[in-house]
Length: 369
Length: 215
Ligand code: SF4
Ligand code: SF4
Image (cartoon, rainbow over all chains, first blue to last red; front, side, top):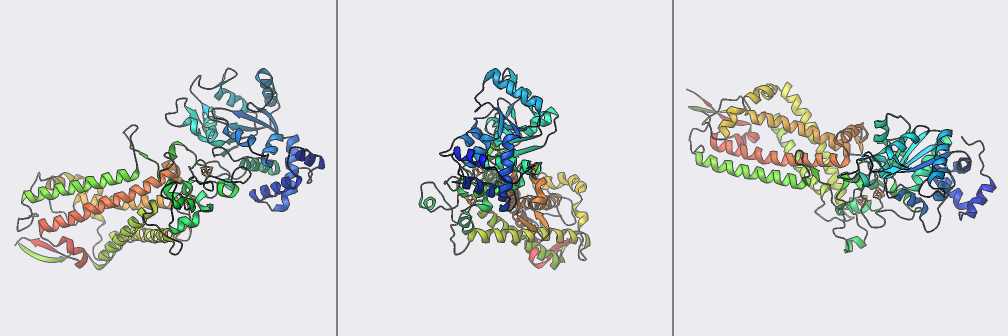
């Protein structure tokens, strides 16, 4: 989509003014190029695409039921990262959390964006479906979503709340919160949708998808959960820096132990890395400073749809199983197995005693007559 | 009543049985370890890697063993016993067999090879092997048998069960099924041997059982 391959000096100066060195910006573009599967020589093209986007590609960012953690992830950092600044300068027409305008004025901007259409709709937060549980400007959030999804060219659901409901949709889900995909289905709207599960979303994932869209004019390849394969194609476990300890069988058994200080694998502390698909170990958070396991915490599986419910308790090896028919009763898989085995053993003992009492064993000819 | 040693199991059946015993034992032990690594390792021995390797090898044995067993059920020259597994007939015979095992009746009908409950449980074992294989495939990363891409070819399993944690749960519960099965299976063979005095227990090594004939 870029009609020129070089980023202008003016743009780089503008970045410099915001605290991003020209060199850092180009380095970042190079890294993004590699993320997207291009060679690093693509960096100038990406830089140009970003510059063009700041002039052309409108973005509408809607906040629904969430703690605005994804917005926070972009705007809070010790120093601005290229990813933040890029999102900052994208023509984000509407973002309730950080825009200067408010109330009627803000609404007007949104109405104008809708009339012009062709924007990328970024959805942050889950959508309450229970009446009166989530309203913006006197309108149900589902209604707001419906209005704004129509004119969008593509929808990016960012963060776990927006993809499948995340924390606000956790049991018992009093507001009956649903994710974007489910909302689109219920409303009967079909639009290209990209799910960026994570809590909060990694800013670099979002920039990666947006840049990919700007360069190629389409959303990236998605996996079966609608997540971009380039970010969700491998498990945490596959790229984890502690994997050598896992393979060797060296595990942290309790926090505050020698094993923990030796950075052993967190598998037994409930790490969900083996069942969580995301590029966290490669891309990391906060301008590639660190990520969960590097910081010493087990992965809690926030990149997977159905998180949190499907991944609680976070420090257990396997989350509890719901026994069908028994509402609210949960038991670990091991407990179920152990109980079944104990019941079997008891049954066997009982049967053995009964057989003894019945005199079948003493019967010389044997039982089968 | 006269008794005669009768050949019940051919060498093929005996080998097939013990191969499965070894596979299930290895799978259960390594499976427990993979689920909860109870022995601390070190970089010298790569304990977890070895456990996983053995687990995968034993899984191949278990799956191929089932294929061989199904083949034998239809094509064994010694005793193709697929008819003994007829679900409807076995279900109809349950009251008779259960009545005997629960001491309501003193005797049961003469079943050709398997007690109806036994035959049905064996079918369940086959089904659980399939479940374990498919959930295992969904958790595996590599090319199964060199050409079935995992987990890609098994994504539907995970989708059906509602997420990878559910897949793991079903997989580990299948192990508990085998544990319970083995307990009952071993008990029943000992008990049958003691009650019927027909060498059932040793027949799976020797191949011979005592059969009674009316004079
Ligand atoms: S810390 Fe977690 S992701 Fe890393 S190797 Fe251990 S189990 Fe895997
Ligand atoms: S490492 Fe796990 S818990 Fe941490 S952000 Fe990535 S997916 Fe979420």
